[in-house]
Length: 120
Image (cartoon, helix red, strand yellow):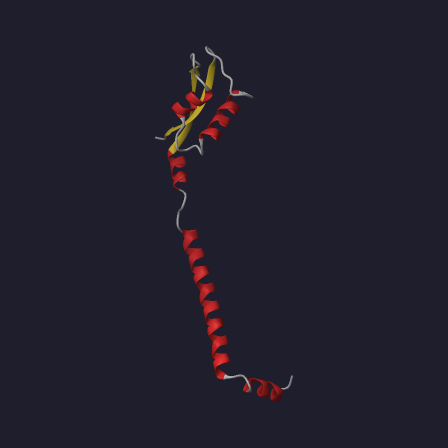
C-alpha cells in the first residue's frame, strides 16, 4: 500500500474513532501494568505462616503402650500439632512409621508416635 493510499484511508476515519482506539490501547496497557504490579506484590509477601512453625519445631518420637480402648485416632489426637496438615495425613505417617497396613492396634503393644516439639 502506497503512502498516498494510506493517507486517503486514514483521512476518511473520523477523529473520534481514532481517539476511541487510542483510549482502548491506553486502558489495555494500564490493565497489563496493574496485573504485573499486583503479581510482583503478591510474590514478595510472605504467605505461609506454617513454614515458620516448621523451622521452630523439631520432630521427635515417643513410644506409647496401647491401653484398652485406645485407637490410632485417639492416640494421634493427643500428639498432633499444627505442624501437620490434617489428622488423616498424621495417621498415615504413624502407620508408615510402625509398618501398619490397617488402623487395628492391640492392647499391650507399643507404638512409635512421631510428633513436633518446640525447638531450642
